[in-house]
Structures are given as C-alpha cells and as structure tokens.
Length: 538
Ligand code: FAD
Ligand code: SIN
Image (cartoon, rainbow, N blue to C red):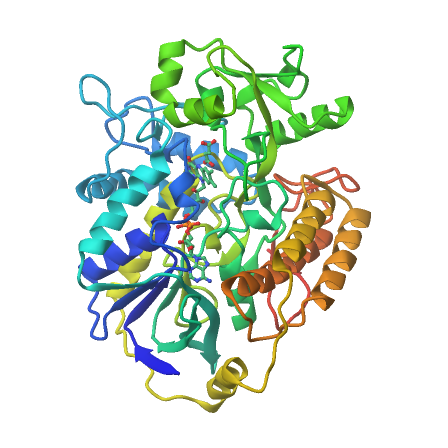
C-alpha cells in the first residue's frame, strides 16, 4: 500500500470543498501540501444542480438587512437554529459573495449591471442571488473548478473514495482512500482532514440529489467516533418533477413559486390556502406536507404547478433549464401544468461542528451539507445552504491559518490493524447485486421513514434495514465504490431511523403523526458510536 503525507486533505468537490481548497491554499502554510479527493469527477456533486440561488445579504440591497435574514432563518428553523451561528453566517454573506466574484463567479445582473435578487419561500424580502437563470450551482461550481484546476498547489485525486478515517488517541490522523478505477488503496496521514462530502438524498426512493449523495461523510465520522447532531431532520422539497428519469428527480425550483406560480390539483383548483396563509410561500416543510396530504387524499402520484400566470418571455429567460427539461418531457411550462411531487432534498442533520468546522474529534473538520452547524435547525430556509458552504469553508480556512499543521509521522498499532482489514488477501468476497439492495433500502426509507413517520413505521424500517444488512456481508473491505456507498447508506439509514424514533415530538421537517405537537423545550439530538443510541442534549 502507498503512504503519503499532506498538511491538509479535503474530501469532496462540491462548493464547500472547492472553495475551502482555494481559501486554504491562499492563506494557510502547507509544508506538506494540499490534497483534494473526490469520488467522481471534479465538479460532480449536489452543488452542481443547485437552481434557485444563494442568499446574498448585500450592503447594496437597501430593502434587506442581516436582522431580517436572521429572523427569517430562525423562524423557518422551528426553534433549533443557533442564534450565533445564524448571525455569523448572515454577517459574512456580503464578504464571501464579493470574494466569489473575485474567483470569477458571475451572478445575474439587470440592465444597469446591478445584482438581481429573487424571492423564495419564507424569505421576507428579495435577497437571493442567482446565476445562469436557474443554473446557480453549475455556474459557481464551474468557476471554482477552473480555479482549482489552474492552481498547481492543489493536488486533486478524482474517482477516489475516502473509506475510513484513521483515528487513534482521540485524534484523527489520516484517511484511507480507495481508487475505484485502479482498485488500489492509499493511506494518507494529515493533521487536518476536512469532510465536505455533502448529503444523503440517495437514501430515499424519490430525491432531487444525484447518485453520489449517499451519506459517506456521516458514516465515516460516526465510525470515527464523532458526535452527530439532529440526524432525524431530512428536508423534502415540495416540487420535484414527478417524472422518473434515472437516479433522481429533476427539481422545479422554489423560485418558480417565488415568481408567482401556484400549486393546484388536476382540475386547476388551488389548495395551499387550506394549509397556511402564506400559501405557496410557506416554509418548505409545510408546503411539502400539504402536497403529500393532497396526494394521499386524492390517491394520486402528484399535484401540479401552474406557472402559466407568469409572462412566457420571463419564464424562458429566468428558468431556461427548467423550461428545457420540461419541454423534453412534453410540458410547455408557459401553457401546461407541471406535474410535481415532494422528494428528499437536503439534510439538516449531520456531523456536529462549531463555526471553525471543528468536529468533536481533534484534526477532523466538516463543512457544507455534511456538517450540522446549527444554521438550519429543523427546517432549512431556501438558498441558505450554498451560503453556509461558502462561509464555513472560509471560516475553516481562517482557523487553519492560526494553527501549526504538523503531519503525524508515526504509524501506530491500532491504525495498522485497521488497515490490515482492508488489505487482507485471504478475505474472499462474493459479488452482490448492489442495485437491487439499494432500491430496496430506498423504498424502505421512503415508505417508513419519510415525510410522515410514527413509531410503528420507524420500527418497521429498523427491522427491514437490519434484515437488508444481513444480506450485505461486508464489515470493512468492499469490492467497489458502489459497495462502499451501500455500506454507508445502510449505516446512515439506521442512524436516521434511530434518531427519528427517539424524538417524540413533531418539529420542522420531522413529522411524527403519533406525536403531532411540538414540545416547549427545544433540544438537539446527539449520537455517538460509543453511546450507541441517541442521547438528547440541550
Ligand atoms: P456536495 O455539493 O454534495 O459535494 C459533495 C462532494 O463530496 C462531491 O464531490 C462528492 O463526490 C464528494 N464525496 C462524497 N463522499 C465522498 C467520499 N467518500 N470520498 C470522496 N468524495 C466524496 N442550496 C441552495 O442554497 N440553493 C439552491 O438553489 C439549491 N438548489 C438545489 C437543487 C438541487 C437539485 C439540489 C440537489 C440541492 C440544492 N441545494 C440548494 C442544496 C445545495 O446544493 C447543497 O446543499 C450544497 O451544494 C452542498 O454542497 P457541499 O459542497 O456540502 O456538498
Ligand atoms: C430551489 O431552487 O428550490 C432549491 C433551493 C434550495 O434548496 O435552497
């Protein structure tokens, strides 16, 4: 096996990982260099598919203020957002966006070259910046990828999976990686490992997330002993295009509702006023539950989004990708209703971190969707994720600047015996039908641990997942990336279901039909491997 040393290793090349790489390279003393590893091609990530935009609380937007953004974020967060985190991220919005502009990111502007701001659900003012109309993620990602590729101080490994974090004496000392093309393992020692591995959407049958969102960071950090927070909180987006095409469902951005589109049944009858006075622009969890309830009541697979009230030229200019994707499926959004249904979209839970990106394990950091900073609470406000990715990448880089990054040189015995489990040639593994196992898991999570849950459904999920686990005889070494991903998906699912069982109330995106009320006391759930079951802490 090959061994290497790096001063910092970033795992993941979404917007959080890419921006962190650029900021760390700019600011931090890196005697052993900087490595970015990503399990697919650079740029393939959830980030690339972000549509609606990125919150920009910009000084030049006189109708907005950080106080207003903080208030909207906290209201949406159902009592679980952390005030100091929200404040820090909001207050850094202007600076990071100006920095992104310097890295070549372009946001849409009006004819006077002023930034355009749009509105999405539960925002009280227009404050969302977008790029390429509805291709915000792709535009940011492309600009950052270009800078990373041009930067000779950032080494990039593509098609490479992080499969195990190497921890001893309560410190993370490195990471074991696996190249899916060459089937080779490499051990990397580093004093700073940053997980920027994104979300978990692929655990569910219906999701807006691409194939790579398999909860790897969650599983890696949990196995390493890190504290995990609020794992029961999965956000379901109200409006994914209700047409199956591949591993995920195409998103119909909330910004379409922000521009005036209405939700209705097949006869064009609008229904949101029955559920919330803010109607289509109520927080995401409320709109999702309203749509799902309508679908159940009428025994149909989708409702409709009516965007025909928006000027056709505006629709085409503002939402070019959505217009095109719908047209490819025979839907002209200027004239036809769009069939939509909820889908798993974002993970509020994750690896507990502070604002420096520090986890509970020394030397291990997490940023972006993989982390739980306390910004989103029980329900993320639209377009706050991209902002969090960038601000937290920035603050992690600031923090690393202040510490000495000395690579741990010695190989200790506990790490050596762990590595042996991956390289043991005597372990013969038989091929497994991963696509069908994966499909089964996604069905279980959707049916029993989805938008509405109760004790009976969650216990059913637990039994079924454990049964599936017994059909997947892998503890350490796997044969392929698909297998490593499935191993992580099983663990992430068990963690989510266990946490959902433990939270006996409904709050934000966690809706227990057997405990419909929200408790007065507002607590985070925390779980670690050592303790085994979720523990609720203030
Ligand atoms: P990601 O962008 O998901 O990147 C994770 C990276 O980690 C990937 O490169 C992946 O390959 C890599 N990786 C994972 N596991 C491993 C491993 N084991 N080894 C090596 N590499 C690994 N948010 C907004 O704020 N505004 C929006 O408009 C918006 N629209 C969205 C639309 C869609 C369709 C989706 C799916 C999400 C949207 N979101 C939006 C959410 C937002 O895009 C994500 O939360 C955010 O981009 C996450 O960025 P990230 O860098 O943390 O992770
Ligand atoms: C969307 O465009 O609806 C997604 C925005 C988000 O997830 O923040």
